[in-house]
Length: 176
Image (tube, rainbow, N blue to C red; front, side, top):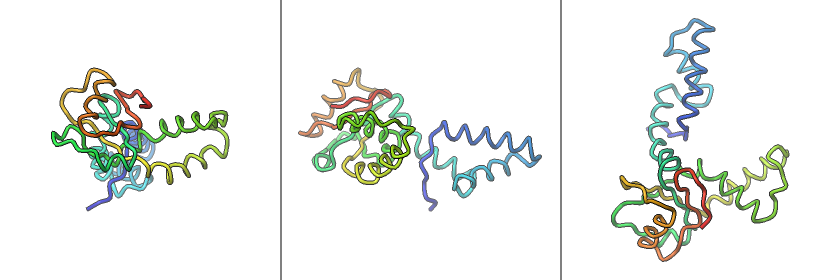
């Protein structure tokens, strides 16, 4: 089985554009161009890109159009949803990490460091290695999305005594 690499639909589109440009410039076949572009970004071939994008699509859809919650890792041990509305999603960090990082920096009053500061990226990567392990992400899978963030919180209350740390409701980050 191939390793799944997290890739967004926007990144797939950029790779397709790059492959089209490569095809025009070098005269190779479309399939060859797709494979070359895929290998440049550490995929085995284009089909690997497509498989990875398909695997990540439910997470991406939940982030932009639905609900993702982040629970403290200790609180997540008590999270039970027998109806299956929430499923643990280990890929959600890829979309949610930057929001949490910005929130933590603001709370620590480190917001004055600009993203262009050379230490910003180093600090962010260090936090991602250490800080993200403190969260467990759950993706909402029911066919109808709750009408509000409060509706999401009500459903979470049914599943856990503990509230979520963060909620992403239709691409809107909420500290809870």
